Amino acid sequence: MKIAVIGVGYVGLVTSACFAKLGHTVIGADNDKNKIAKLNAGGIPIFEPGLEEIVSDGVKHGRLTFTSNAKEAIKKSDVVFICVGTPPRPDGSADLSSVEKVAKWAAEVMTSYKLIIEKSTVPVKTGEWVKHTIRKNIKRNIPFDVASNPEFLREGTAIYDFLNPDRIVFGVDSEKAKKVLLELYKDIDAPKLVTNINTAELIKHASNSFLSMKISFINAISRICEKAGADVTKIAEGMGYDKRIARAFLNAGPGFGGFCFPKDVSAFIHIADQLGYDFHLLKSVERVNEEQKMFVVEKVVAAIGAVRGKKIGVLGLAFKPNTDDTRFSPALEIVKMLLKQGAEISAYDPEGMENARKSLKGLKTGSDEYAVMKRADALLILTDWEEFRNLDLPRIKKLLKKPVVVDARNLYDPAKMKKAGFKYYSIGR
Ligand code: UDX
Image 1 (cartoon, helix red, strand yellow):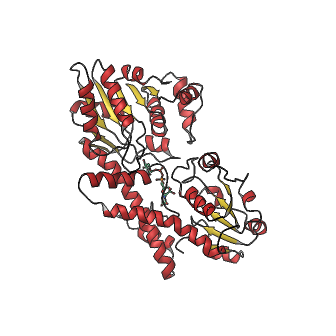
Image 2: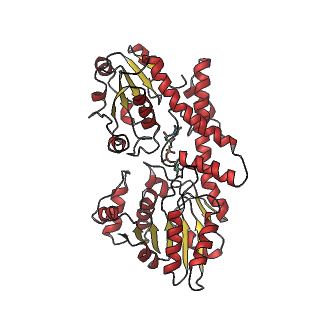
Image 3: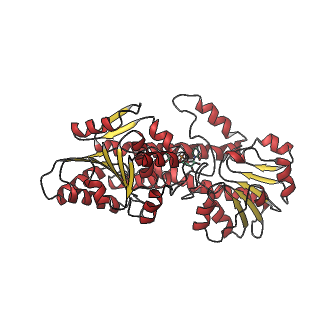
């Protein structure tokens, strides 16, 4: 099939490359000319394991091309995926102006049937609005359909997630749209759930909010654990054996971040509000998440006293491992809070330092894990990178001014750390 993917940011680029891998002909379009030039020259603008290989494979076999002319891409395709950004407005609602633009372009260039599919995370009823926008702007009576096909990709494992999903959701209101979607994904073996468009849109927000709720739940439990002398990791294990609960997303830490969860939770609260429901459960999820970051800062203060003038070595800036993404990263927000209180920070992250320095001008970074620990009053671990799990403890002890470690990701065994001579603080243990 001939596919246009409008918006080759994170979701769009992964979608383009994976559909090309599945044998379709894909044109990725974006109004960022630099990005398109980079892609056409064989480079990729983001860090995502495995992405470069499948992009270059698609380009080499002529199944994947990139353009900055979105209208042209739409014109040449049977299927159009809307993958443009839907960034949060100050009140938490999603800004849909880019989606509207694509709908208008589609209306303008359509000469025969096209299926317009929203993949970007959008508020419920956006599909209806896209349909209405196209109908209002289309010149002739050309048949078209709108569908919702939300993505559930995780950064760091996006290619795997696309090709091996737990489920694929199709929100459609015609048999034809359903047929096209089933054909597009025919080589992917996964449960395919067909619903109406509003339901599909809500599945995405409900899923991300539920996962966020699991994280805030275990973070709240971690606070109780500290007061009760219990171990949150064992509680997660004990709960996780129950198949109805499952162990995933029960790791206590500095709170959830990234470009999806915080934005989607806040958008869902707003959507519910607009529909006349006060989603107070989700408001608490958000509140627990904000408190958790402050709680990590308080932990540092409890460990070394007021931080003004103290040197803190920080490991981790990305919002999670295997990504360079620092958007809405709890690590970066905690670093900002510590800097505001007068701490001297030196930070290291395997991939996230460049982005962190862009959003936090003047941030001091080190060349490796150990460089940031030299003469520091404490070591603070904020992201659960695999390489932070097996550090050389005697070396850390020698480098630090005082042997204090605050581990906001529970990477180390408290008993072992104590035995190694550290004053060790973690979350909920
Ligand atoms: C998420 C969803 O998982 C994905 O389905 C959706 O399409 C986009 O949003 P992503 O943002 O890439 O993906 O990251 P994810 O792995 O879900 O982690 C999100 C945040 O939650 C990270 O900050 C992570 O550190 C945190 N987290 C996750 C926890 O604090 N504890 C956990 O147990 C799991």
